[in-house]
Length: 276
Image (cartoon, rainbow, N blue to C red; front, top):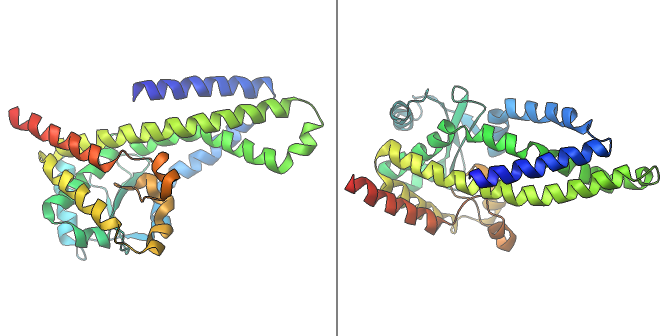
């Protein structure tokens, strides 16, 4: 994880230098405002995208009790609890800080898992909140977003600017290279942080086997969900506890580690905890 973040920092430092030399550094503050607004409203945007809404303890008493107890064990404020009406068995966490966070589950997840497995999944999402993963990934993606926007502008308006000098070509080529490299590095960082959240969940519950069993159940169940439902939620892959598989490219550039590797690491951690 440290090596990946160092490589991202090095790529972004070179990118800033290229933009500065090409007189395109004005994109940075403009995109900074855009990313800040997106980050500030990240919880509302994620819930809206998933069709999820906050629920109270009267409607989902068991779910609220689990989240409250696990939050205490994780030394976190209790997050907002939300539910999405979806056949896809999954969960995600969002929010700009530990105090402004939300844990959401789908109705498909509640129907698929038993109580211990559900605790494992909720603990995984709380570990994301404790590790401040939304903030980390937002910061890591900032200059990648800038690069992507410059590349898009290059395709739209490149012709006219190209005749005005070579500065635009420098900015465009640098942006394209940074976007491709950061795309791969950010996904690697995401996979490492999923491993960290798995470990955090195991330490919160003291039961790595519960999360391993949940991952196995969710992975098997997703293959039975209608393709229409999978396509509707594919854009939220980065938030999910198990991403939806979307063909060869989806597996090649996945945001999460393979489920088998996650289960294997959880099994190893279970042995470690038993010996301790």
